[in-house]
Structure formats: C-alpha cells, structure tokens
Length: 328
Ligand code: NAD
Image (cartoon, rainbow, N blue to C red; front, top):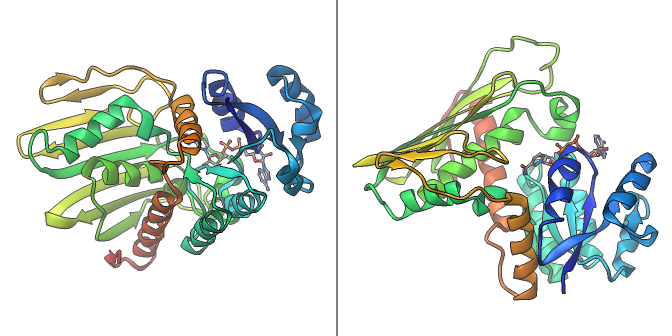
C-alpha cells in the first residue's frame, strides 16, 4: 500500500519537481495539499485527483492529525518557516520530509529533531542527491579511496536571476549560501565521508547593493577536514556555477553539472562515469516511504540537516569576523 504525502507550500519546487515526481513513485503518492493561496486549489485538485477533504490551509493545518490518508507531510516553504511546520506536522502524528536548509538556526533544528523523537516519527531532509548515481559515485570515489586519499575538493554552486523571499534574510536565513551553497557543504561531506573541523570565508563584492541589501550576493569559503584535506567552495546569486571536483593522490573525479535535477555529467581520471539518469525526487520520496514501512532509519535524517546548518552558521561567522572558525 502506498503512503499518502501532503505537500506544504505549492511553489516552484512542489509544482515543478515534487508533484510530477510523485506520479513516478511506487511507495507513496500525492494525497493532499496545504496552501495559503485558495486560487491554486482547483488546478491542483483536478490535476492530481485530490479530494476536498485532503486540502488544508495554514490555519486548519493541525487538523491533518485526523486524516488517515496523510502519512507524510513534506514541508516546501521558505526556509524560516520550516521549523514551525515540521514541528506542527510531527505533533499531528505525521512523518516529515523537510526541504533544505533544514532551518535557519541550529536551535530550530534541535527542536525539530526533539519533536520527531517525541512523536516517534521519522524526519528526513530533502537531500535528493544522495539518490543520484553520479553523486553516489563521488561518495564511493572518496570514501572507498578509489584513487587514494582525497587531498582537495572544489565545489561551486550558484545561480543568477533570484528574487522574492530568497533575498529576504528574515525568510531565507541568508543568501546563496543557505539556498545553493549548502550543496557544496553537503558534497564535500559526502565525498569525503568526513566532517569539517574549521572554516574561513570571504564575502564577494555587491554589484547590486539595493537587491542584496539583506543578504550576501556571493561568498567564497574554505573548509578544513582532518588530515589536512581542504575544500574550496563558492556560491553566488549573480553567477551560474555547478561543479564538484575531487583531487586524490592518484587521480580525480568531477561532476559538471553536479547538483542539477537532470543531466548530471561525470568524469574521472579513468574516463567518463557510466551512470544512469534517474528521477532524484521520486527515488528520495520512495526511499523515505520504504524506510517508514520497513521501520528503518532514513539515510538523510534531521541530524544530517542540523550538521549542515551548523556549518553554514560557522561560515557566516567566519565571513563576518574574518576569523577561522572551528566547528566543534
Ligand atoms: P517558491 O517561492 O517557489 O515557493 C514557496 C511557497 O511558499 C509558495 O507557494 C508561497 O506561496 C509559499 N509561502 C507561504 N508563506 C510564504 C511567505 N511568507 N513568503 C513567501 N512564500 C510563502 O520557493 P521554492 O523554490 O519552491 O522553495 C521552497 C523550499 O524548497 C525552500 O526551502 C527551498 O530551499 C527548497 N527547494 C529545494 C530544492 C531541492 O532541489 N531540494 C529546490 C528548490 C527549492
């Protein structure tokens, strides 16, 4: 039996990626929607055959507790709203997938993890690349030391043409680091299978100080890992970038694009990576539904999201102070 998912927040990611992916899943399906915009409801109900009883708004959302059709709540709201809706969904007795970044502070992450523990429900973060074959190949390259120990990582992720809540620190928690730079932090962590011990960071110049009055426009940062391994990372809201490269003792591996929904391309010092194109979001949501059914842990839990938020906060502190910030 397929588990029912309710999407909270029907913005671009829900509409363009998650809802279509839920037509390709085998262990879960789109059972409900939660939206503050009534005009979106008829189209969504028609397109995905959603009964009126499975449509909620932000006021009556907690009544989802009474709805046996909904097993999983998927929070796809602006970053600063993740904690509230994740906790409310867990308290309503639902399993939760929350989009990245998990929240805007570590304290919020702790409350979310605590709420999951108290409810006895699973909490997962929308880290789709853990289900993407080229990125999995990078994890193997690094963690299995295919070409010896990795010495250096380069990770860059940026996009131009950003507007709306992403430029508002109160809703986004920061600029491109929170939104797309987080992929570089993730990539360095999963390629190495290690945690950074310290970071340094430098904010880039603001070419449009009005647009970026609230958040950084671009950022370069460095992560130190045990054994003198380094990662050099970059993010931006005015430049498109999308690469991951690992330099090992006896060879290298690289993805470009690395973090895209489609068309990820990989190469190593031995030649092209031979990996399948998959629907990342479908695999991610199916794995979560399977984890619930099998009573096992998710490979992308709240704790992983918390660690990233902790690192992001350290990077911002390094940026603001100019100091090397150790990560405990
Ligand atoms: P979006 O702006 O397209 O959608 C946000 C939704 O939240 C909209 O439907 C909007 O109506 C609703 N909303 C409710 N209260 C709001 C408020 N106060 N201000 C603004 N919007 C409000 O954004 P999106 O691109 O769909 O991103 C949503 C979340 O998904 C973010 O956390 C983002 O980081 C994440 N995301 C993840 C991926 C991924 O690949 N995993 C990709 C895109 C977005």
